[in-house]
Structure formats: C-alpha cells, structure tokens
Image (tube, rainbow, N blue to C red; front, side, top):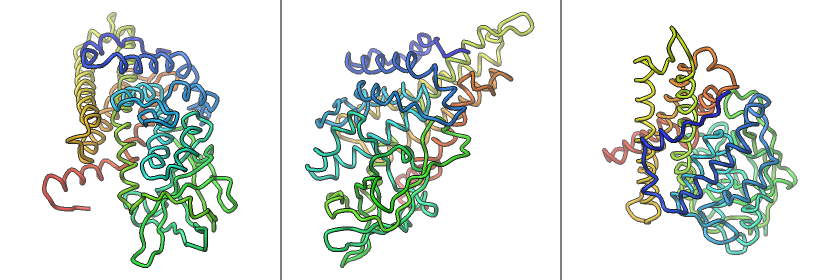
Length: 396
C-alpha cells in the first residue's frame, strides 16, 4: 500500500509556499502530519466497514479545526486561507473526514455565530469547538434537494414554543449529533417564511436513523432527521435568519471549504499514482517512462496547480472582505470538484487492476468524489448560478 510521499515535486510545481504566511504554513503542515500519522492508517478499514473514527474527535478539536475561521467563543480564529488549507489536508485523508469537520463548522457553528443570539453563541459554540457537542444541518428533504424552497418541514407557533414536523435526509453527522440546525417554514401574518432553529436531538419526537447501503462517503456518518411534532422553546429560533438566503449563506461557507478540500483528494490520488508509476515495471521499464503515463501525470499536475492557485486567490478575496461573491464560490466549487473526480479516475486507471482495491486510495476517493460533485449544490446548479450572473437570465 502506498499512502503518498511524493509531495515535494508537486509542491514545487504548484509553488504557493512563498505566498503563505508562517501561520498558514504551520496550519497546513500540522494538519498534514496529523492526517498521515493518525488518520490514514485506519481509513481503509473504516471505509470498508462504513464507520467513522469518533475516537479522533477530541484530537480534531485539539487541532482547532472545528469552526476554525470563527473569531472568539473558543474557536481558533484562523483566516480563511488557513482554514482552506486545513480542509485540503483533511480531504487528502478522506472526504468523509472533511465533511464531518465542514458540517460542524460551516453548517452548524457558522449559522449560530452569524444568525444566533449572544446567548446561543455562548451556550453552544465553545462546546462545539471542543468537540463536546456535535451538530448536523437539516435542509435537504426527500422532495427538496436542489430546490430547498420546496421544503415541507413546518414550524408552528404554540404559545412559548414552536412545534416542528418534517423529514430531512442525506444529513452528514446526524446519527452522532447532539443538535441539529433545522430549516423550516414558519407561518406568519405576512407569508410563509423559512427560519433556522437549533433543535436538540434528544427532544421527544425526533429520531436520526442512519443511512445504510452507501457506496460513497462510507467513512462518514449519514442519516435522516425525522421530526413528529417536536416541541422547542421559542428562543430556539436563530433570530437573525431571514428566509432561504440565510440557509444559502451557510451553504456558501461549506462550498468554500469544499473547493479547497477536493484538491486534497486529487493530490492524494496523484501522489499515489506517481509513486506507483515509478515502481511498476512493464516491459522491463517503469510505466513512469511511458509517454502516455507521463501525459496523464502532467495533465493531472497542471489541473491541480490551477485549482490551487484559484482557491488561494479566492481565500485572499474572502479574507480581504471585498470583491467576494457567491458566484465566485460556485465557479471554484464547480471546477475543482470536476477536476478532482477526473484525476481520481485517471489515477485509478494508472494503478491498473490494483486500483479497485481499497488498499489503495484512488477508488475510495473516486467513489467519495461522486458525492462531493453533487452535494452543496450540484454541478448543474452551480452552472446555472454562473449562467444567471453572466447573462442576467434565470434558467432555474
């Protein structure tokens, strides 16, 4: 089994180190080392057994990776480039690991930080940063995926409580979650509007069954959130949420991390394929000496480098707080997911028959990336977001 040790040559091709601060480099290198020492040895077994290493959660918290780019409340307060580099290294390990951390931070901690009350921030964020509370994000429904506004989950006011009923599916972390950020339609005097709620998963009427029989993201906990007249106090609502736009703002936080993360998956596949090509002898020579293999490796390295430069530019824009728009995130999420999936497939082919074994990383990443290509906005959705911006015409 080759876990990928050919980082230097690809780092030289990409050549971004001179553009990173000492802190950014430290975050990347510390996360990289932890992935190789603590996570990679066990992930093939977790993928085969469809389990997630919950025992590593305290170590992830110790690294400061939960809500890493949130200021205060026990969070690391990293800039967005450091955060992106960390997500990239996590996904070098597995998309399921990066998803776990992304959901905790971008989809659960961020909405509490951005849309919650100060009391909610103080109550939840420090414990979530410490990994003591795990969250999940309840938006997708059986009949409302790419069109979340079609959700049927409803929250009805009843005195000092809301009563929530509905079903969410394909929810990362839900089987292990202590709380859920649930999006529901709330009846008001004006119109039905969408609001976010913090729902503790030990409430009466809520269950979070695990989703089985997945062929992708197997080393990830996926489930549902089923709510049958779940009563929550009125102060469970995230007071600053105003319609579907609030939920989409959370998705953009997650999409930013995905755009970085998938580069890690692509690099893992590339590193493995390059090492294998140097060692695999065919017709008395290593296959790395063959023109077709060299072209595949060069094309892969080129696309990884271009993707890396794109997210670095995007991260700088986000840190500067100017000229940063949702369609920028759509551009890089769309491009980088497709890039990573293509490279995983090419790398799998370079490995030949060995490429279908979970002892190698390529097939695992390839299967995972089929999900990453789709979630947090499908490739088609991001195409239409960009198309709407370029043409001024809404094609949804």
